[in-house]
Length: 189
Image (tube, rainbow, N blue to C red):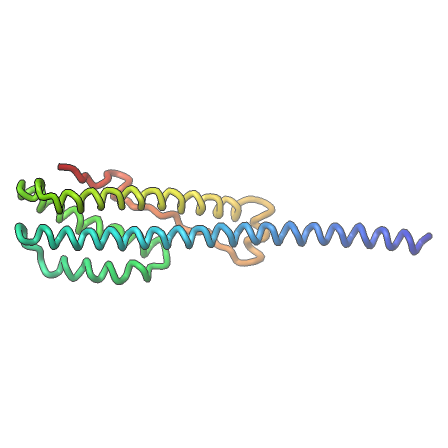
């Protein structure tokens, strides 16, 4: 009888431990899923930024017969294009986004100063393509920030915060494009 009682208690304890282990594994897996989702979304943002830089480069080529651009601008575009796919953190992507937005702003000023550029079909098509890419970047940023919010909330809440500390998960940074918060680039004719 005592042996049967010990076996039952042992089984109950084993089931409790198994339940706790399964719960910890499920929380760990959720953290990993969110982390991987954030990394994948950053990858999509990198690709979209690269497309934007490619379009900016094409726009510079289309506009440079009318407006002179410093060699520094062309060099900066090339540097940004090569660095965008190497960017691994939200901060690096934010810096690339800010610099490419500044370059785009300078090009838009040039387009505004030359009315004949506004009627150029090539320039119009490139501006439309850039607008689409801007929208794509905004969608990806929204998705990324939602993932980060859930990830960070799990780190802050019990009992997932125990698992986060146990496995070394740290809060992720939100992706904020300061210029876009205040004003999106105006791409119009």
